[in-house]
Amino acid sequence: MKFSKLVTLSLIALLTVTGCTSQPPVAEKNSIVVYAGRDEELVQPLVEMFEQETGIEVEVRYAGSAELAAQLLEEGTNSPADVFFAQDAGALGAISKAGLFTKLPSSIYDLVPSSYSAADGMWVGVSGRVRVLNYNPKTVTELPASVFDLADPQWKGRVGIAPSNASFQAFVTAMRVVEGDEKTLAWLEAMKENAVIFEKNGAILEAVEAGVVDVGLINHYYWFALAQEQGLSNMNSKIAQFESNDVGNLINAAGVGILKDSPAAQKFVEFLLSETGQSYFAEQTREYPLIAGVPAADDLAPLAEIPAPKVDLSDLDSLEQTLELIRQAGLI
Image (cartoon, rainbow, N blue to C red; front, top):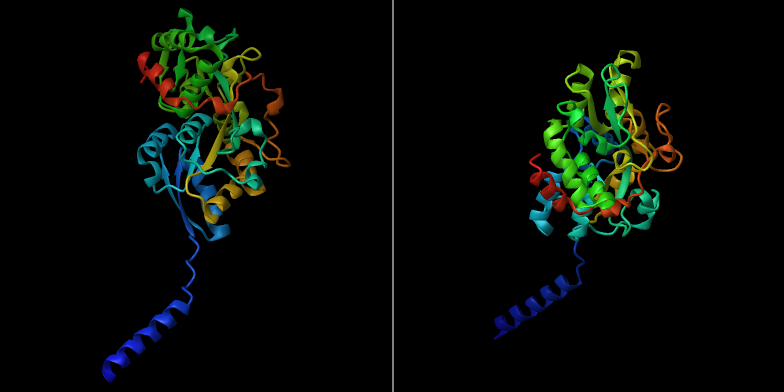
């Protein structure tokens, strides 16, 4: 009996001590997984700058924005990704539409003009890019007034496009929003006849420079980056805009959304929108910075002067319907 009483009292004492002892705090996560639909060559130096500045480890998976968006939709809430850094608003919109993003705090969202971010605060733009016509001035003496003019038979075999590229897909989505599916499909079917297919913007630029095709549809910064690298006087091609409000002049935004909210994930987004991050986009990738106080490169026309169509980037979230039209036209 005495032994039994002793065991009971010991157990009570142990339970009392255990109940009163505070548990050690859970360590703050000091690493994140980023799905990046941007070229590794462009983004990895910025990621390394962030790691060095914050001590936060970043594991990056690089692939196309559309491919990563499809993977995130398949993985759902079980995805290992904390952050989605996408090339365009369309891929971001698709993930937002699926309810996978957490709402950004106003301290982050308010850094960027709302026209370059999601209307509901689920993702924020980090850099601006403009769709342009890249052309060879030796073979193109009269520029097309509209991107729709490229459907004319005279352009057969002379146009470079990248249907599997996220920027092209976002542009097609904008065309659907502005002009409707029927007109967009007709244009895509004309591109099936007229266009030479490339994988990326950079390959289109190289083809125009080499005289393989006469014109190409690309993002502006590819041309400016090459001009900076080899010298403006050594460029064989030029870039131009279509007529005012033409969908071919779309201003899009690379942007970022948080899938799993954490201080580390927020710090990563804050870094992209810091003076350091924004200056990197302006100086190294030739994209447009989107926060106040960081100027674009001197040779870029101000965004306000681009004759862009009026498109709410939040409306570019119907990626699957766009892909279906591109498939229907036989381009992918």
